[in-house]
Image (tube, helix red, strand yellow):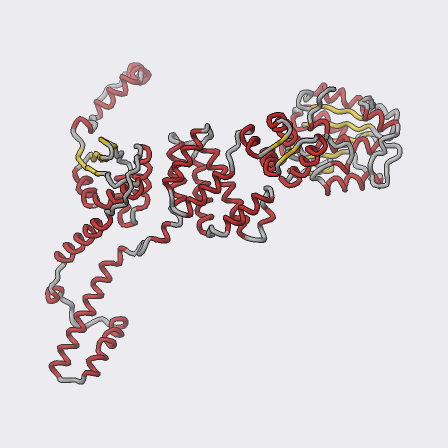
Length: 581
């Protein structure tokens, strides 16, 4: 018995069997029942949604001698039988993709002069009409404007914007919708039931999502999966056959990002890339996953999820643990990576940095005093002024013998004055036993003390690579506070190297930058130990040797080097008789 693919075997033969185009089908059936037919129709929409199929069903119903009360063709009259047996002389189909010349259209227009032998109308179906040349469109325009009474044109296209406006204005336009995932799943269930094929709903959901709104594509993928799975379509076999990334990876990455576990995400990413998947596909899939989680967070947008019921419940469960701020930030990060991915020379590093940034979205909320460092000095002065005033009030009370009640109320009065009035007598820091010099010394000592406290023993000794070291170094520079933006920009381009594991060396090309980095060396080391999860890391800084720093060339030397690399410049100099001064 001859095998027929599902896309042809289960092609709709009547309006009632058309999937996903209910409103459009109802309009066409009402036109057949009322007999109010236009002379030209334009069916637009993406591929595989039923444009040509509906055109054939409509053409058959128009010429049916005994249409049903619902507007369907009877299927038993001579016109219907000739159409089914593909011997009808009243319905013509033209593929404009391969017959797009003026001669083809003129030959078709000659056919319009002959009235139908059986039935009422001659129907001309022109598929992919946007492929017609401009001359062919102009040749077709006159007949389309004033066609014979027995002629009806049905034009089908996937790219309406390429059709001349003069053609569009003479047609009734029907826009076909993309197939929803749910409607595709239901149709695949029907086909699987008739073919006696077992299935898992999650597997059919993967097929429907892969088809991207086209029913023909969905049926073709269904046949492929059925052949691979040997009659029992399962989720695991479908993702293996179609080379689709398992959605569990996206749920896992999101959970790890909520827990700020960037290292575990890097391990998961490495496993995905080892299986042959592209990092860009992972980022795109993760962005779609985060969008679905965001839709599942609000009951009003749950209906926008196009997935199976089981996955919809998983989205709802994860949405309860994700804040709106996290989802917005993660989607923004994914979109930025998607925009820059094609231009990036190191695509893996870009994907890694994107995932690290996603894992740090919620971590920023846990940093105490973030963004308040510039106020430290101001707070210190305010505290000294308050203490100085308190001592002055205490001395005044002791000298004048005022009551203890007045002495107790003095600090409160001084606090009010602090908010409203400025003291008349200038404050001299020398009398307080402090100067700007000692203030600077104390300020310089304080970070060192904090840096010493930052280096903690985590009890971990994980191995790491130079790629991971570079990722952590870059992310660390991005997280540096605003007041260190200048230093962050300078050290971000440095390349830390593993000299002898786990010893890390950073080579700096000038002494000034080396001095600045030395001041925060312990802070840098503490961050590397924490992010790379290795207590044994040591950090050494040194100035680059002369042979490691490229010599600055003079202008003459730069020009001579250009001449040696580009013969066209030397030829230009010779032709124009140029001299280098």
